[in-house]
Amino acid sequence: MSKWEYLKKGDIVDVVSPGFASTPEEVEGSRQFLLKWGLQPRIPKKLIQKHFLHSNTDEKRFGFLREALAAKDSKIIWCLRGGYGSNRLLPLLDEVKKPARQKLLVGISDITSLHVYFEQRWNWPTMHASLLDRMGSGKVPPKIEKETMDLLFGKTKGVEFKKLKAMNKAAENLKSVKSSVVGGNLVVLQSTIGTPYQLNTDNKILFIEDLGERGYRVDRILEHFQQAGLYKKCKTLVIGEFLGGQESDGRVLWPQVFKSWAERLDIPVFSGMEAGHGIVQRPVPFLTKAVLTGGKKGCLWIEAEGEES
Image (cartoon, rainbow, N blue to C red; front, side, top):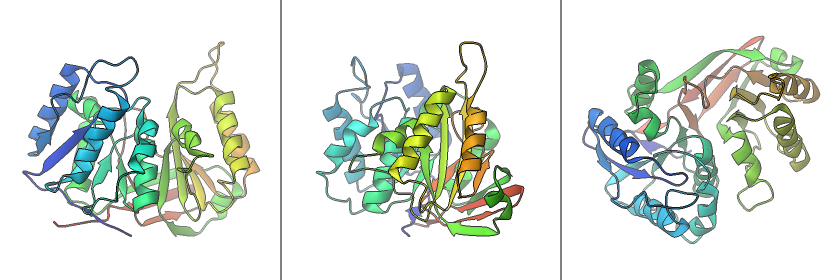
């Protein structure tokens, strides 16, 4: 597997905005956050422009991403925010030759489209971690900020998710699985199915999370995964944070949906991974070495496979 380059003080961070727009205050907060870490933020002046859907036109958003990918003096691309839009850039990325220098992409939510692309087309590991606008607004707990920083700077060599709840017998009986983690936002992952960018879960640990999806919508997506064959060669399914999604009567049905699917699937299913859209957004390295041990309380260890530049 490829390895990213650890950050060090003074490194340039290329900031991109592939989806929704951020406010000027959020952009400035992101700048100050990176400066606090001793990094040099490179935020294009016209990164955010008035648009009825996105932070900019497809062409401009792609142009800024392409410039960040081609830059020879940076090794990380950090997304300002999520929101719909990243998947519209994938056909444009097809026209770009694989960059000579590997970059580490950081972001969550809609950025899942880019995670899948970088991992499957270029064999680049990526980092599912808090977006810059959230970091810059002080919404990330100090403990999670430090954990993310330590991973990116190479002060720690991995992240451990303990006390994962086994949701079926296959999970309880599992001894261990050595693989790598892929996945991200559930709805965005579904949007890859039937496209040239479809998520490949073969021999992988699949991680999913989402926000505001009602029970029937979650079930529909999991059924789509089933019909598309995403579970056939998948090693395990690990469920991260799912928030909101109340029915009209206030009930939340997606826990029952996951329980039903865990009983239906042959692969081990675990829940309780502290990653997603909640307050506690722990960083998750994708496409790096990972070990998942089973039992009623599972444990997932994911290496941060970086190297000194």
